Image (tube, rainbow, N blue to C red):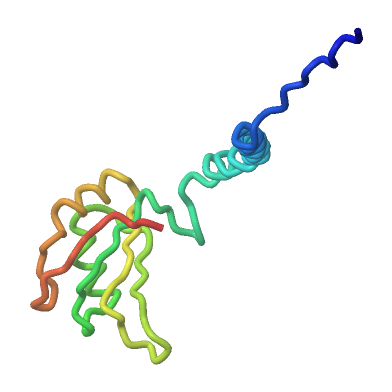
Length: 134
């Protein structure tokens, strides 16, 4: 009599699918590692600067009266520390959109302004102060 052939057990489709999924996930993670490292390096190199402004020292000011000019805003915000730059956002015609950004020389001044300016009144309107979110 002849010996029966050795039985070869093939994996079931569910197991094959799980293995392929794990392999694909691993390949995806390996592709991401250099990209993530490059992004982190860029973040370290830029030190929070974007288009000439430092996001760690910048304060968002909202709900401004449309009559408020950069000069008026500067006069009010200078009370918290030296201001490096002010940008009042305007439309195509040059009219204020009611919000702007104030960049301070130091992060401590920005934090002080954040705490004190939120709810402050400028030109009869209560303003909102928040950290710049990029």
